[in-house]
Length: 268
Image 1 (cartoon, rainbow, N blue to C red):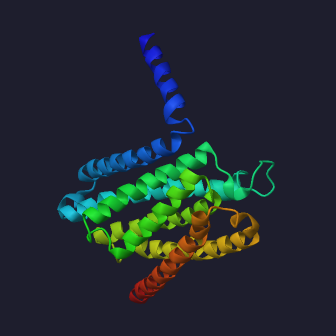
Image 2: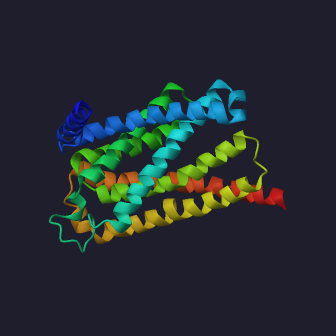
Image 3: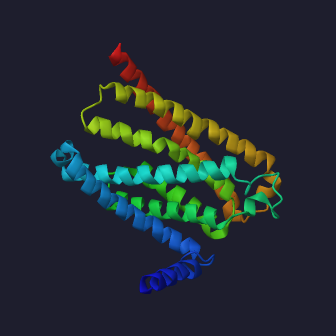
């Protein structure tokens, strides 16, 4: 009976405070940071026990190994959330009976997803800066800062969440990027798995970071009458962030194509 009483009290606390609309943005960000720490510790424990090559890595390589586990879990989570809201949910649909302009719509679930993502960007950016340049150079700091500001603004203002989730679909490429690093670190750069993963990276990057961005710009164009009603800062973010990320994506795509060509030439 006492256990049930404590459980009911805990559930009531979560509903009244942690998941209440005024608190949700903050609790979701804290949840994202906490999950990053939890995944890091789980990666460290699991890898040290079940992956033989892990213990032979340098301290910095082990940190990066664990850190890439965090980014992979975040990428899977936010990609699924983004795909749901962009392609399956009626929240941002033009056909929906919901009131209000599409650019001003949000929900507790959409806010929660963005909050967790903000928590991830804060935690990962902190690690990149703390261990600079071991986990990434200036381009990573720029990417995370730009993405973090855009996602945080969308979360706390409730504006342009549809476009924020469109951009976040690009995280679908992260697991394969991290898998390439894991295979390389494990000495499997000449394996068939490395080649297949390279092709997967090429296709995913082309779809999620180039073609999808073109579709997003088209979507902004046909809904410009709504976009122009946003706050000035949000209006600028809708254009500046995707354009900046598109330039970076094209630069990285060029490197991906060169790397894939080199791998295919070595296999012949």
